[in-house]
Length: 461
Image 1 (cartoon, one colour):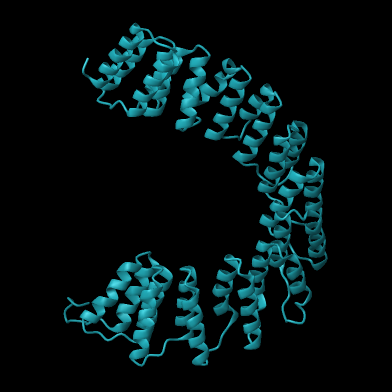
Image 2 (image 1 turned 90 degrees about the vertical axis):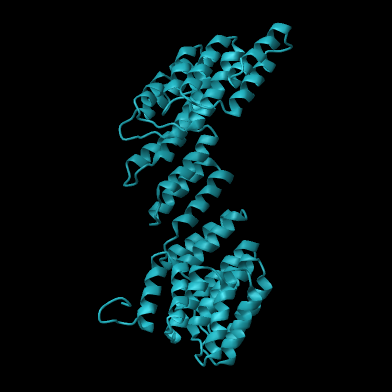
């Protein structure tokens, strides 16, 4: 605009539009800098431009002090800040943990006779509840009522704070008095209440609230339902967990894959593989798609129960894409059971690129292959992982080669790495030294071997 012909000088609105666009594009610092550019260009900002700068500082950059300076600047120029400006700044001070500053702004709004809505009180109440300062939260609620501002939906914030400290008598009292206070408890209210009861171990009371929700036609939030199921499955008879899950479905509550995973995980921990199987097959019959965590929980349960062939069948089932967690579960379980020689199906998928293991998986594979006597496979695996010779698997392999007395193979491995211009990491040195130490009290020849290997690794021998 400046360099157009004829010249078209940018206006306050032009700058404000550009600032808003920059802030919305995730470039709030550039937006704030543009305000400075506007001043340098001799363009006088209006109240909307100041409000935008205040919003950028408070909501985008989390700089409440800078935003407060803008508010004072506006007032001195005779541009009274709007209620929205105060609200932005109150939220910013609360996020920064500066409650006294937020309360001072609230007093300023009262002095200016600005309307105080529940939305303005919400961040202050949230901060009190997050700090478990229920006494201050009580006082704020009373202050709202006294000023004629009904708390309305922010009662849910208050109830969450009460549940956090376990004051369920107060929660019930608020719900009982809701009619007189012109507020109707909703699904969020009861979900918060039920989750809080469960977390304090009051499962029976949580079920009572669940029944009340049903009579009111409210839908329990999935998160609260999963917490309820988790506590039932953990603390009560395992079969009750499944019955509660089915009962919840009958009542019309939304049951998702996380809910099934929660119950299955508890079956797994208690080695109830038949119940896990029943739940798994029930899940497959429903319009809920099992995820990789579902399969991993089930495979882990089968391995714990010694059903290794069944675990292999599930692993190979159509539609299941294994991840690194699956690999670790199978490798650990098969090795612990002395069945590492049966892991060929897993190694085949890894070699074919169907599974992309992480460092921990590769380390476990190296350990497993070496301990089962498949040394050449372990060496070849390390040579061909990604671009070859990653540090952690090399360190594991070096440890086993030295422990088994195969010093020549270890030196060959190091020579290959040096030829390729790779650095022998300190972790490799540490594992070589540890392997020599683990071989027991060394004779002179052992010490000479260690020095020889270290010299070769350092390139001085």
